Structures are given as C-alpha cells and as structure tokens.
Image (cartoon, rainbow, N blue to C red):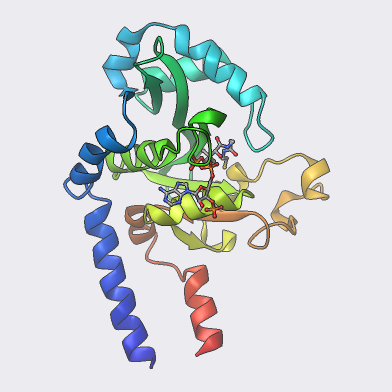
Length: 238
Ligand SMILES: CC(C)(COP(=O)(O)OP(=O)(O)OC[C@H]1O[C@@H](n2cnc3c(N)ncnc32)[C@H](O)[C@@H]1OP(=O)(O)O)[C@@H](O)C(=O)NCCC(=O)NCCS
C-alpha cells in the first residue's frame, strides 16, 4: 500500500516538474490567449516601457484587500526594476490593470541563501474566475512568475484557501513552518499581534492550521525535500 503511494507520488512529482518547467508551461501560456482574451501579461523591460500608470492602480488594489499587505509606489517600482512583478492588462479596455503578482525579497537565511516571498497576488473583482468574465488570470500570473524564477528560493504564505488551491494547481508543495530555515521563518512571520495573539510570532497558533506555507517544487528540492503536510496526512491514514 505504501509502495503504491510512493510510486503514485513519484509520478505526480515528475508530472509537476514537467508541467511547471519553462517548456511545460508553453502550451498553457499559448492557451491563455483563448482563456483570457485581450489580457496581456507584462513584466521586465516591457513593464518599464509601459509607463507608470499601473503603479497607482496596484497601490489602490493592495489598500482595498484584507488578505494583501499594502504596498507603496516606491516598493512597486523597486520590484519592477528587479523584474520581479508581472501585471495583467486588459488591452481591450484602455489598458486597465486587472491583476498582478510579485516576488518580494525576504532576506538571506543562515546558509547565506536568498529567499523571496510570492505576494501581491490580486485580480480585479469582475475579472476573477467567479467574476463576470470567468477568466483564469490568477493562474496565468502564477504560472508565469514561477516558471521565470525557478532558480530562486520562494515561499508563499496565506490564510486564504482559494490561494492555497491556486498554488496547488501550480505545483506548490505544502510544508510545515518548522521546515523553513530559521531566519526565513522569522522573516516571513511578521503579522501584527492583533492577528497572531502573541508577541513572539514563532509561537503563532495560526501556523499550519489556518495559515499555510507553500514552496515551489524546485525550492522544495533544494530544501532537501522536507516532509510535506500531505505526506503526514497519508502516513496517519495508511
Ligand atoms: C486570490 C485571487 C487572485 C484569486 O482569483 P481567481 O483565481 O480569479 O478566483 P476567484 O477569487 O474568483 O475564485 C476562486 C475560485 O475560483 C475557482 N477557480 C479559479 N480558477 C480556477 C481554474 N483555473 N480552474 C478551476 N477553478 C478555478 C476555484 O473554485 C476557486 O475556489 P476554491 O477556493 O474552491 O479554490 C482573487 O480572489 C483576489 O484577487 N483576491 C483578493 C486578494 C487576495 O486575497 N490575494 C491572495 C492573497 S494570499
């Protein structure tokens, strides 16, 4: 029974490696032209050439969502210069900004490795999957940023279950907080006391019960393949 689980898991893992690779994501990126008609995904030098009009729209978006940390225009321009943000633009409606996703530098861990946090994931309400247009824009953003940054150590934390499901569709591996390098763990746990109910966030009781940590497959491999939350569940049910 365990043998067949590991074989299945291995097949799933191989599929994830392919589906999230630069080559494996090409068909899905092409299909986005049909699934998200009129939407362009702009990043890097193209975003610099796009002008600054997107910045105020994304600042306003981050101010209006309870699950998002507010970002300033200076912060957003910094990630633009680092090529660490992708925005979704509706070319059919005066290039209005309809989504974004970014990688924020978290710092260096005790092994001198850089870590980044995936965040500022936002889609304009009527462009969401359950909005009036039914477009998978969040999927398109997620897939692109992960494929472009496979060499980076990335994590994503959230209390939003839709974001957990979205990450799972893109090969994010759910691991316990304690699997993170200590310095990275400290750097990501900066929620206010009103939320964590403790002045030592290392003891926040939301961790792994309401607040989940996920890492992309290449990061998980570089971490030495720590046990995934799903592995613990399978062990207790088998
Ligand atoms: C998070 C966010 C980007 C997701 O946008 P979205 O994928 O377009 O989807 P919606 O919010 O309309 O709804 C999500 C639901 O749509 C469905 N869905 C979305 N894309 C799908 C797809 N490609 N295939 C199947 N179902 C899909 C899922 O059922 C999901 O519900 P779930 O909780 O059962 O997984 C968007 O809700 C948002 O901007 N929220 C505010 C900011 C925020 O909370 N950001 C996340 C911070 S961690």
